[in-house]
Length: 113
Ligand code: AMP
Ligand code: ZN
Image (cartoon, rainbow, N blue to C red):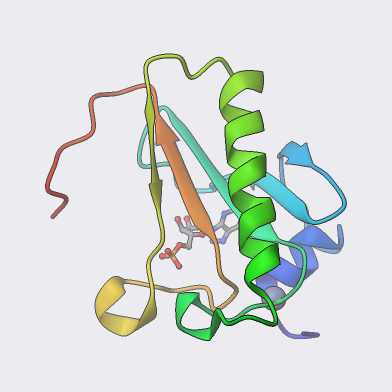
């Protein structure tokens, strides 16, 4: 999508600090981190939100989770981490390109607020 911030980040048209990239996935540091380690993991293909996942695009999401396991090893997140997806207004989604927050390096409260 031409007017999507995360499509532009994946394409290198908007700068970001890259943490991981492969054919299907791009991961970068969150600009406003909520934990000492806060990376945004996205499929390069535009999917608006978790609500738009179906059989035509679920492989993109599988690639994201394969990448998360690789990033966790690459970044030595041995003490654990949390993966968060915010979907829709009540979910707190502000960027409408599906993304997964990968949070680590502090004890994360449960349940979240
Ligand atoms: P969400 O509220 O789940 O839609 O998350 C969007 C996330 O994207 C927030 O944590 C923002 O801090 C982050 N964000 C927004 N713009 C940028 C940017 N240009 N570079 C990196 N992270 C960003
Ligand atoms: Zn997009």
